[in-house]
Amino acid sequence: MKYIVTSICALALFACGQKTQQQAAGKELVYGQAVDSSKAVSIDAALSEFEKNGKAEAVVSGNISAVCKGEGCWYSITAGNADVYAEFDEKFTIAKDCAGKNTIATGRFYRDTTGIDDLKKEAKEEGKPQAEIDAINAPKVVVQFKASGVVIK
Image (cartoon, rainbow, N blue to C red):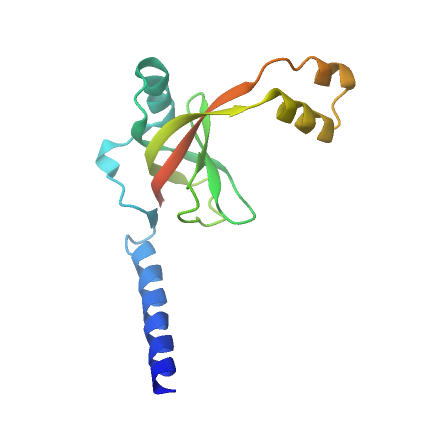
């Protein structure tokens, strides 16, 4: 019994320490790995660099335009003309009420492809006209960002 009580207390102290670590930067919330804010460039500039030179690793900054309302498992980063979907590879989740706040994230860009059959299925589920569904004849390729660390201001 003494062992169980000790284990529960240790777990509670560990959990409290984790929350303090996330909020240690004052009003900033930090998730995942450390982020070197001094290396941050806007998401549109980093995306342009990825498209031009294939440089995938980046520290990006921008505004959070949308966030997963279910679990906080993704968000969209916007700056300039870029609006990029960012996910966290199930390593952490973020606050679900952070839309509209500024963010800096470290991670890498990658291309994600949605096949023709999946695109047609999505279009059908969205109630698109059959002519529009039949016109889908190529996969959709988008650039996304996989963040290993995030700071929300």
